[in-house]
Length: 299
Length: 227
View 1: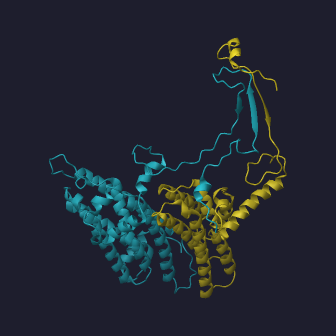
View 2: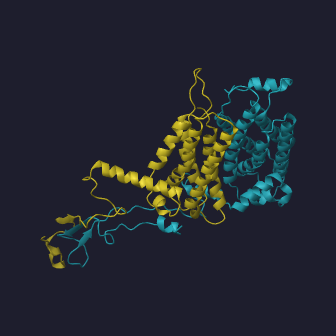
View 3: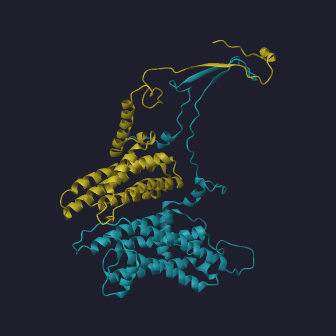
């Protein structure tokens, strides 16, 4: 394959008449001029308005970019591959990274790449595995199984609600119930309440454990599925609490917040498992009750 | 062409601010047949069939380059969106779920859902690569992503043909293999075209969404199993 420099292809191409013999030329001679130039005849060559190549600047250092330009959002995507991988690991195994990881790295440089793409991956992983689980459930029956594409929209609604609304609520709770014990005016990064974006970032990365778990949920063994729910919710919830501990400590409703964070996490995992993957168990009244309250999907 | 010589000694005759007469001559030098790369000026005179065939040949050329990625300039420099439109419409038509007698959808996506998935998906992947700092323009990237659907569309055609026979496990695995080959080919072609535009250290971050995009479409292809 010829190694063509993409940069050359993307460069501005010169279409000006001086270098392009085949373009139209209009030779205009001004009969009178009130100019101050000393040329005896003025030749004005008409040039086509030059197309401006779209300028892609580097992530700008100044913060004053308009909300509508791309540069405003580029600062949230200023991550390397290794950093993303490190953040994913930190959401599952906090002991592998330094103690102050959240305060040093994530709060200072939150990124939106992780939350967005982990959420999208999770949506489609759940849809695909949910269909596989569905198929396995109906494997013994005579009904001709058809796949349900609309699991995608249900999964998407659930995940996007979780990733957007819960951090919002948490941020509001932290912001308005924090008591600042330090009377001195120095506000280090560790002591200010976490910003909206860094909470998103944290929650987005905390969903990353559900991706392998969603694949494992296709195994149609009921107690195994419950085990996965407990493990995933516990690990990911514990890590969340661990990272948020400094910020949570300053709030008046310390215990209530911890309880509700864990509760929402557990609820999400349970909801996924029951709705998409669970084997309807005629002996279990709880599962029946849950299934009858969910919107019916056509098989 | 008569003209006044504009010298300084003439300027006192006209008050300042007077523009005077401007005359000129416009000519298009006809230097034989212009090559395909230059701007065309004489397309009004040619028959429509020729214009149509030229565009069609350009689209076909790009399809060929997707199958055998050797040089990048034909997709990047002269991008167009005809190919992606054709592929997207074809795939959405074939992939849509059929309506049954009891007015329920069989579970496959609607035409509009596939359409939106392809175009909005390509737009989001492009936006992602621009936000990461890549130096490629929006439509070039959408063009590449759309044209690289071609292997997936081919695998859809083959799977559809396989579906005419009575199904068993072997045929399912055959469909799965063909779809996976199509997916790998599409991803490989797209990374070949778009890979250079990202700075080092972020290449994987830009390639992953492309992978995910083609994976989703391949999943739609392999799941399509109604006759």
